[in-house]
Amino acid sequence: MTLELQSFLCEQEIVHETSTPHVHQQNGRAEWLNQTLLEKAQSMQLEACLPDSWWEFAFATATHVYNYTSIKHLKWKTPQEIFTSEKPKISHLHCHAMQMFRISDDLHPNNQNNQLERRARLP
Image 1 (spheres, rainbow, N blue to C red):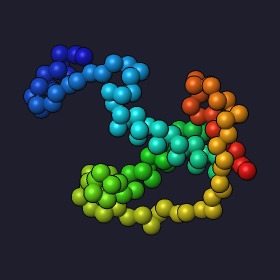
Image 2 (tube, helix red, strand yellow):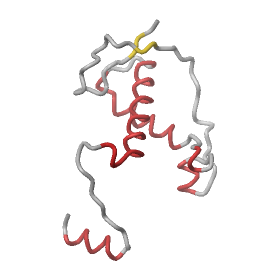
Image 3 (cartoon, rainbow, N blue to C red):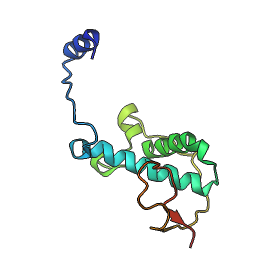
């Protein structure tokens, strides 16, 4: 961390804490959010029959939808509402017909390298 960043954090009274790499127990909420967004992105990508190269668009869309979804620990407000102090307009969001997928253990169960691989198949 640069001295410039350290002084900025100190001026803003921000405490900078580090965590051990690859120890998800130290950062549970962020790990949970990452997994939630990844699952939403995967399901959107599969439903739209998008190629794997479009994963970033699916992830961006999943993040956008998450920011417009009410959350219990925010007292049923949306992250967008907390950030802007206004109820978000959701008229641009559309629900499309969805297929149901069955989780399948035979689709690369031990492959931890590619988190974007399919974990489910159509029944």
